[in-house]
Amino acid sequence: MSRTSQSVALAAVVAVLGVFAAAKLQYSGEPPLKLPVAECDPDLWKHVYDPGRLRVIEACTAVEGRVVSVHSAADGDMHIGLDPENKSVLNLVNVMHARRKLVVEVVCDHAPPDKGAVPCCAGFTSSITAPRVGDLIRVTGAYVTDRDNGWNEIHPVTRIEVLH
Image (cartoon, rainbow, N blue to C red; front, side):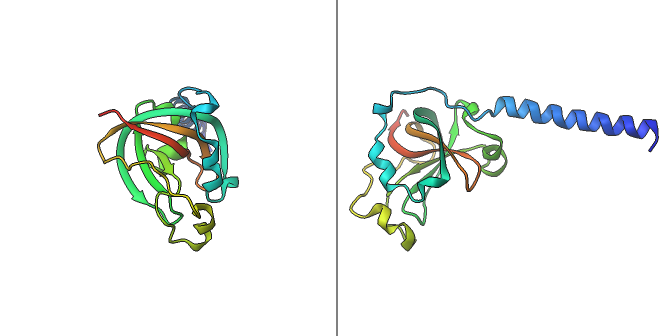
């Protein structure tokens, strides 16, 4: 390999590392604020399907953003795709695989079609009303990393307030 080729290769590696470092700074995966734990309902954890897959970053926080999607999941949860106002709540996996959205999960929104999740929701249905696509909302709940997917989420959700 010639010196010119080595220089070009080194410049390319430095450029890629620079882009990665800049993205990591912008999408740091940090909660916007720490709320008192009493602001979040700890009993909701009883209804989380496979809670061991969730690594808690902040026990209770609030995130504001615009709803871009709402759908029912097989585990009984309502999944909301949120375009957060504060992008630092996203990590690089949110950016690459969740299309720059924060995943928000309301547990036991509906009867779970997945039979493995039925025991989690037995005798419990969430009272949280689904927001509409386009709504600006404030979500309060636990801020976690889903180890199965690698992205950050608010899961379980204690409260959703529609701001407008």
